[in-house]
Amino acid sequence: MSEFIQLDEALNSEAGKVLCWPVFDQEVAEERVSQLRGLGVESIALGGPHVVLGDQILGKGHVGVVIKAIYKGREVALKCRRTDAGRTTMENEARLLGKANEAGVGPLMYTHSMDFIVMEKLVGPYFGDWVRENIDKTNEIRENVSTIIGIARKLDAARIDHGELTKIRRHFIVTGDGPRVIDFESSSLGRTPQNLTCTVQSLFLHTNFAKVLARAYPVPDRDDLLETLRRYKKTPSEENYKGVLKAINLI
Image (cartoon, one colour):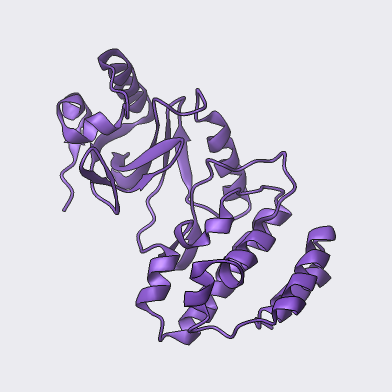
């Protein structure tokens, strides 16, 4: 079980070092703790599938790292901007996650500041790991694939390009309520959304994961699939979306 460290003691703990990583600066770290107090974060903790400074954490990306926290009495995920990130604030990512929430997808965002996003903590394995561990559960795999495709369609409709769905196996977490998309640090409202096409390609074409999925899911006809994706990419209508669903054996 994770040991939660109160903010007053955070900078004396291993968890506190992650708040200001990879280049630790005492003054910056203290200012970040002040941000957390202002947001209503009460404590932080380590634990998860990724490793930073020899410690396990929930997530690690190019812009931020994710650890556990307590916010207003509930356990949440806390995304911390890396000190070497190529951006000076989390504002844009928070805005995009908020837009995704409006479309009914992504972890629920509770609040944010310049260096932090406080959001719903999703519990479950990455989709890629889940498939490998449940390769014989063909009906459940089909249901989860259908859910993932639906999420990609919602993002397209909201005009949000996720930007990372070519690497689908680690951008969906399979919770008790089904798959949920995560990590909006590469997302944009300024690009043409390609969520559905990237997701389908990641699931069925050109990837090592596609070979794994093929052990449990009927392999679509490659030429037919590519043609339906071209039509959808040109005109992302409901009719062309249904064409993609048919090509991947979902209708």
